[in-house]
Image 1 (tube, rainbow, N blue to C red):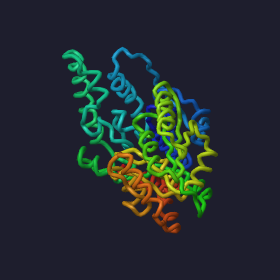
Image 2 (spheres, helix red, strand yellow):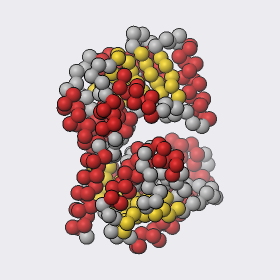
Image 3 (cartoon, rainbow, N blue to C red):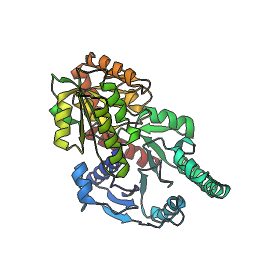
Image 4 (tube, one colour):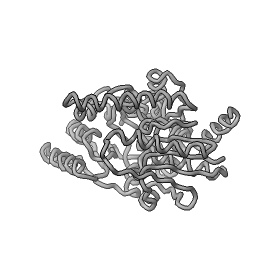
Length: 377
């Protein structure tokens, strides 16, 4: 089949981009003719270095670059309208950025619970467009158009999502059945690096920005002076650098000797720390999935995650492989870390569970879905 896959940009190299890359790779390995439609030129060296997937000479790429900011938020709608001109040339269209890109497709992945999906106005949009009647009118026209596009988008084809947590909210909000397909993770690499005996140490890996709550873990560390905390993440951009410095100063202010900040952690060092640390924390309430906790679980870490997340429901299986916190109060998080340090996990059961997130399982799910779609066609 001739298949068109659409994604805003592969360059961020997050979980959504990895899913898109592995999807394209799977489709080409199955003998399909795959074209990627994106809105930013892919820096393939950067993408390959970070994800290990190189599709440079395997798939075609159509780029619709439109850098003008003349109409701001309306650009996304214009780009989507422009992109639909390509749709009729393909047997199958897969939108892997359904929460952002208002483009109807045969298969739509919704990978996060954006304000668009939840039918809410984001804080960023509220601050930017509600400062005057004129700006509010400008925004409301856009929102009305986007809501109509979303209604049309979800009425077509199949909706896929990355966790049972997301599935529940999508089905309640959009009144449309969703199928769970877990994003692919190279779990075998982390299983091989795991150790039976680990240090009573805590690891957290997330891009340094305030919303990731590194500072909460730093404050939690003062309640557990006998445990070592490794707090890692990418530092990129002004706000990220400022937040990293805030965390650094916070450690000094609290006079903590059991916290180590590690910016821009290499892949080798990440695997080393995952094999060493007994506990992995993920301080993101309402996280829809999270590749990092899956990697940590594959490495044999006990997870400490939000009760209100796909990480708790799908990855931890409601307590079988971790402990949950209900709020971000540092003393509460510290208590949950202490509970996690005493949790015993059945290694055989863990290894069976973790294969649900493997690349091979992802491939089998895609093959099955394509066969279902072919029968419908």
